[in-house]
Image 1 (cartoon, rainbow, N blue to C red):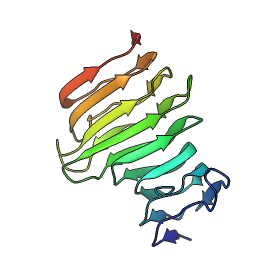
Image 2: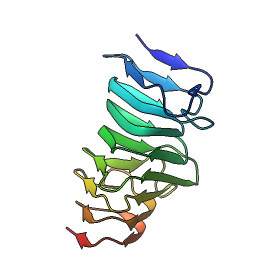
Image 3: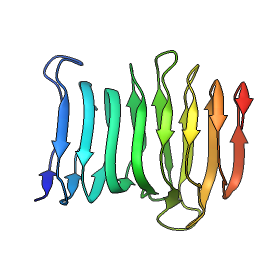
Image 4: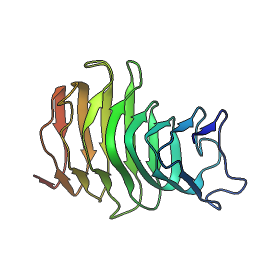
Length: 174
C-alpha cells in the first residue's frame, strides 16, 4: 500500500528520531516538509514505486524508489550522505532544487538518471563541501534541466549532463 503524510514531519528534539518508510510496491507521498522546522535524525525510504518528496532536512538522506520526484527546494544531510537510488525527476516549477551535505567527507550520490519534469524548467545545485558528488546516471538525458551547478566537492564524478548552463567546482572532475 501507499504511505501518505499530508502535513509536515518534525522531530520533537532536533535530530533525535529517525524515520524509515517501507512502501514495497506502493508509493511514498509526502505532502509536507520533513525536518523543516526541527530536523530529524535519519530519513530513509527503503522501497517504493514512486517517492514524492518535498523539502527533507535530516542527518542522513537515503531514498530508494523506482521513481523519485524531488518537488521542492532543499534536501540537506547534516552528518551523512544524501543518496538517491532510482531515477530522479525534478518537479519544482521554475525554481532551484539544492542538495547539500554538511559534514566533511559526506557525499551526494545519485545512482540513476536525473531529468526535469518540464524541459529546462528546474535548476539543480549540488553542494558537497569536502565530500564527493557521484552521479552514476545521465543528467538531463531524457528531459534537459535548466542550470546544473556543483558549487563545491572534493571529487565530482559525472556522466553526460544536458542543461542550459553547466558549472562545476571541485578539486577533481571526472
